[in-house]
Length: 142
Image (cartoon, rainbow, N blue to C red; front, side, top):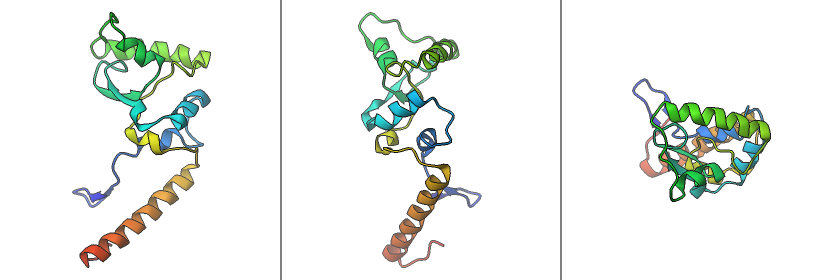
């Protein structure tokens, strides 16, 4: 954890944890895939938007990796294509094809928690980390 120039705490990449929260707007099928994912399932690919992006491995991403598969379109055309395809995939509840941008931390998330519990856990982890840092450096972080 670090401080930004304006004194705010920078917690690092924590975006994927919100996708699995009980208040998340993602479909139950996607949430199920996210909770079952391993860190290696967060692959770097251009098939989501045409730009390099870490996304959840699925039959959609694997189809793009097959020999003879077309190259992803340039941004923003690939993003438009993916948007329409994923709308249909979500509507069909086809969880084996669904994908979404995620970080490698997704492999450590195994349960859906409330946003309140996620915040509580982050604050508790920060307090523990600050205490350990203080003990190592003999300097008060806060």
